[in-house]
Amino acid sequence: VKGFIPFQCYVLRDGGQFLMLDGGLPVHRDEVRNGIEALIGSSHERRFMMTRRELDTILNLPWIAHDFQFHTLYCGGDLSPIDFFEKMDDANFDAQIKTLVDTPFEFLKPGSLGNIGKLELEMLRGALMVLPTFWFYEATTRTLFTSDCWGFLPQATPTGPRVRTPSDAEISAER
Image (cartoon, rainbow, N blue to C red):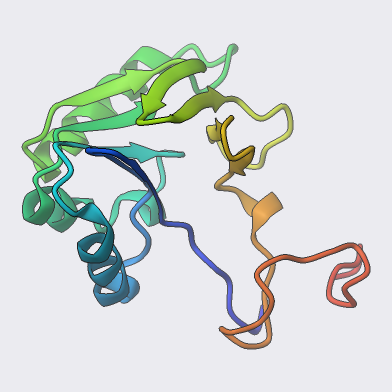
């Protein structure tokens, strides 16, 4: 595939609470750092949440957690209802995270995650997904944060439109 494909790295912040969804790629380290520095302010509660257990969501995590002193890391805990190795996978992933960062780590289950200030965050399992991924829905702004291919389409330039519609010529079954 030729072109540019976005990778997500979102921040939800309200009051003294700061929540980062995924960390982007190491190639974007400077942009990620600048974004965090611009948004973190004097937040007293700093959390990081992974939408899936893939490297593009956590490769920046070691320096982010160290440099910005995150209090808690979260990741979804259910991979598949028919996955007999879920507990072994959870233990392995937990050990990997603990070798990367010295920050408390928690597995989450789908459902309400509570508030970030006035923002309400809920964790969802997508009914149709490519990877074991978790989506997050923020009710106040009615924003859905996904992390799989349903949200990412290649663009000809890095400054192309952020939102695509079915009428865009680049969206087709063949493509």
